[in-house]
Length: 216
View 1 (cartoon, helix red, strand yellow):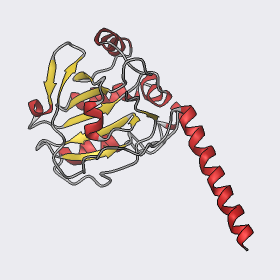
View 2: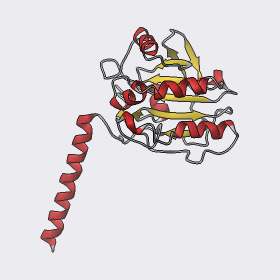
View 3: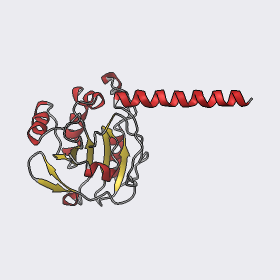
């Protein structure tokens, strides 16, 4: 019996290590954070940060507006799924056309996957026909860690009162297949509709999927 228990424990340990290693090699997963994440229903963390337009903005500037925060990494296959299909741009144009503020945030550190200069960020916005209100450059990861952003894409919705109303995945299809977009439930769109109507978000927290944010 003791031998069987030891063998079982060894198998579990080996299996866990293999799974962890596979995720680490792919750069994809759900890392354990060393910092606290904000809670939905509480004030969204205030920040001031640089933008690709070589200016700065503060979350407080948009009090009275609904705000979407989108963490991105243009080299991540999960992000590419939503941009190469036009899904992310369509959501950006739809929501900003309704007065929503959309901030695309890049927290990749210099020398890591997804890091871009201000000029490169602007070029990406143009070539992909993206339509955010602004692109926030966060190379030190300060804003990302403030929000507990773990993956790209990782999405947040802040209501007009500055309260965090949604945090998590863009949709319920955690794959890189573009064909999965059509049948997916877009959590961000659903959350925005609820917030705009002054109603509680039915699913306020989901598990973000994608590549890990490349913090320094």
